[in-house]
Image 1 (cartoon, rainbow, N blue to C red):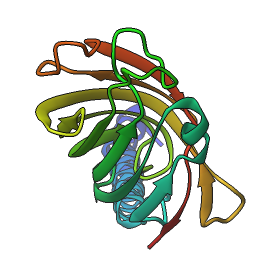
Image 2: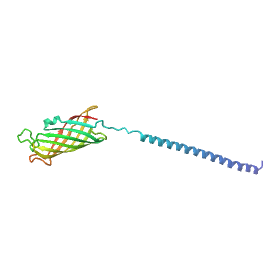
Image 3: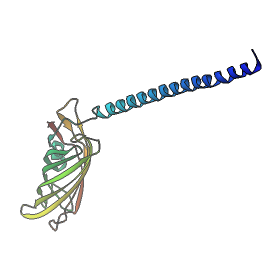
Length: 205
């Protein structure tokens, strides 16, 4: 075979080899793109399923609570409260309180004792998400008072405490620090008192 014939054959087969390699490369690129598309769709569907999955978080099972403060009977201030959860972290309550003596001497055994009755309403925020009416809380209340049997006044109260439910409930104990202030009061009354209170109660749905 002459040199020219071999050159013609070489030139004839070279484009065919390049065309074959290019076709294989295109097929490989196509397969890679298809694989990437399938992976993207799978990841997207998995993410969508995760978003649709219900969130597992704590929600207090109790919506109502009632309590009394028997220890307060011996300490001089006692009362009761009815509490209702209004939001996952908030509650409202109605309370009444009786203090045997709010005079400046704070003595319940003297003849000049100044008793106080009050009825009011307040609110609490519970610091655990969806925790009302359980756990750590802070609250405030405003109440009307009758002091020394006839004089009208006001009681402002702030509190911080912890409602601890026994086991699966419904009974609880609620140690708290309570501060009462009397902006409108009897002339002999003290402006502010602080108390340690340990009410007992029960909660229900």
